[in-house]
Image (cartoon, rainbow, N blue to C red; front, top):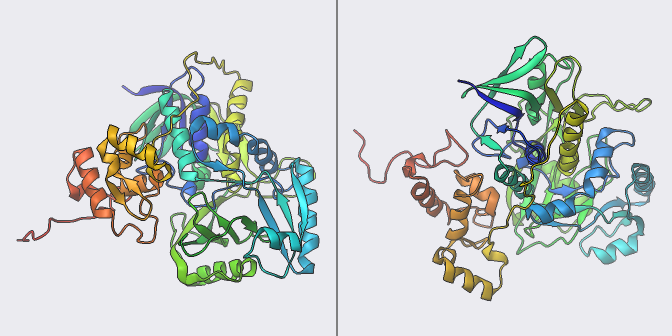
Length: 494
């Protein structure tokens, strides 16, 4: 018998998980599916972790509206879901006198979008605030509402709170097609069987175009993958205190230099269109481009202190802005289309998609209500996702108390990031269990330091094997096909 849901969400990135969390406030049976071995492994897994103020999107676009609306939601959201978030503010830096008018124009655009707390700073003031900045800086736009977050923690926290409030999450579950009854969608087909539902919500990120085409919606819409490459630096060698943007270009916000909540400096991304939606490889040409862009802002950056590089992909769409007179052809799609019934369509959610996620989720709820859904709030709905201990951030006294309660918190597994066995076990048995090495890495920051997992990996494999009750040969980095081991040591092959 096919299982019946009220709402099915396709895609477990930050937007899909926020939608699940927002919908979990109301009566109804909710299913979220994702094809990967963990949530947040697609677009949400590789970005600059910036909560944008909202001066960059073109006035009149959905991007601008959702960005500014969502920005003010982040303080409450971080408090409820217990993920790290800081309003550091950010700078758009003009290098040389010729760039200054472009920054001033950006400030006027921010005012049109309703962004509060913006001021223009002189070059001298920028040099005072950031000792590493290019001495040729002529001024900067300072936006006090800009912030930084951990996008992995944001996605995981929203998903866990959704599960705590009754949402079902099925991983390694790939969408294949819709089940139709006339013009109404009544369910989906997946590699794990069919599921029936009154509503299906497309939040498939890079694949949102393919999902909507299966529903017969927007055949002209196309996601063009846009790759962005990054460097991460050893925090012991390089310290940048601020979020530094260059003057934006037609390709996007540009190659920035920024601090992170984990105190590493990160530079990137570039923005190059590619064909393959799964191509997250880095290239020499791409990394050279990133380095050149970053050095324009901070000439003292030394690439020898880079400890990792990576690439992420943004789902750039070709949907025109619906506001009359606005000539913009890469806006968000947030709609309940007329062509089919029972379908919420989200597409082209690129930057500022992370920032906009809570506002998009709230908009989905409002659209459903406007479509006739009788949304009844649960009396027992709990907005709080309790925080788990983070050994690295605790005082010596609190560490000792924790170890007294559970000695596993006294066993350090990752020396670079000070991650303990107790923390790893807590993630394996959390509301959205971490079942791979990368899943633990995303939740704890394990394996991201100078040794890049060289010390902790064998220990984590053993812990996963023990806690999941599987052979070490079955432990994977990121899901099936990424097993660490293929035979036992000294095993003789026939």
